[in-house]
Amino acid sequence: MAQDRILISSDWGNVSAELADNDATRALVAMLPLTIEMDDHLRQEKTGNLPAALPAAPRQREFSAGTLGLWSSGDFVIYYRDGGVPEPGIVILGQVQGDVSVFDRPGKVTVKIEKAQ
Image 1 (cartoon, one colour):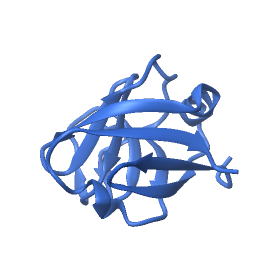
Image 2: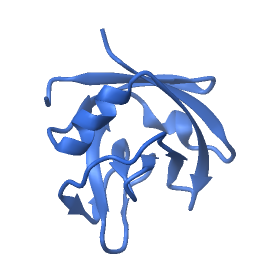
Image 3: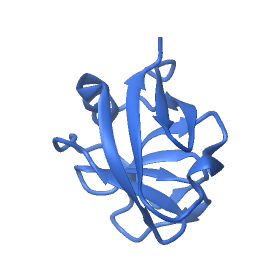
């Protein structure tokens, strides 16, 4: 699945992402297209609720700008800065291939996530 890509669009800009190969990502792709309202959190990420929980997958604590992650089973995250999170860590869903800094601003943003053609 690593070759699968998604598009993330918003009023602030659009990016594409290459997806990780795990059960959580496969379940996310099955939900597409999605529209999610995302909030800023800790000035490092945008986070929003998925319509349903995704299955468990391996977690890690470190992330880089552009990482797409899953905090709890239903919390989708776009990291726009490098950093780390406490245990239990995040499930890596993919990596943004565009300029993720479009999300580096305070406030809410609505994103549409769809499979790239």
